Length: 378
Ligand SMILES: *Cc1c(COP(=O)(O)O)cnc(C)c1O
Image (tube, rainbow, N blue to C red; front, side, top):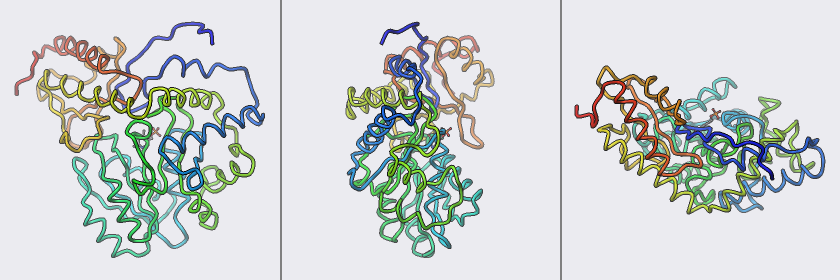
């Protein structure tokens, strides 16, 4: 396609949306189309097949169900749709995105067992096991694969095994790992995972989906319906019978998503993961040169987000750093940890280690502007 106008490239180091390619941006510019046309229905079918394939799901066993919205919509859908009458959901909670699922359960008045762990570490598996043994009414165990708020990577395979041993289904928020870290849905003991177009696939915001166990989706037909727009079975059933979303899909976002998937296959699962790992290494070596510390132990990081402890020097101002970098095409993000001054550097999108090096060169000037000499020694 003929590119009309070059688009300025920004390096987004925030936790999503991510930096996208021009091809993905321009994929949204298409002739107007009614999404009920067969042409669009076919695109949707292809996208749904691919979304299962990204996590190596057996298409006879797993299906992708897409909703129009940001990532939180799919948390909402799974939390409200998968808990049978009189049963409970249990959330393994060691961060902001798990806490959001607890909050969603609260909004729907769904009984929720909130197992809280410190946000700087991994959840304790024995505690999860003991809780499930004690609470036979728990039907759903939910966890977050990679806590984007901190950068901690949770042991989902082990948690999923415990959930299954206790007859529960396992729901995982993989929004900040899907199409970034390789995931095999069945090996990881996942029944339902989540993703959103603007994160790992580096598409546009507006479409989010689950890849979920078809048998379990069908069972959920008989569970209490707590939402109309955000009901999992209703959407699945419409896709299954008619091949389309129940209501108007985000048409242009789907075209961009189709392109982003194409780029994912072109780059390859392993190559993408290697590229992003190099970005993460570059973030750590940049921080080291600056004398800045990462809050989370490197060994438990998901290699996609680094939470940085803000320098104690009172000349340091996050917004000065942010604005200086932003004006030069680099976006950084505040931290999400209570009681500790932090900021985050995330490597989710179509970026390279070279971009990270360029960011640190710009950031060095911002520190100079604040009057802080590098490396920071205290
Ligand atoms: C981004 C993200 C979400 C969804 O956030 P939105 O702002 O609704 O897109 C949910 N969970 C995790 C782990 C995320 O990284």
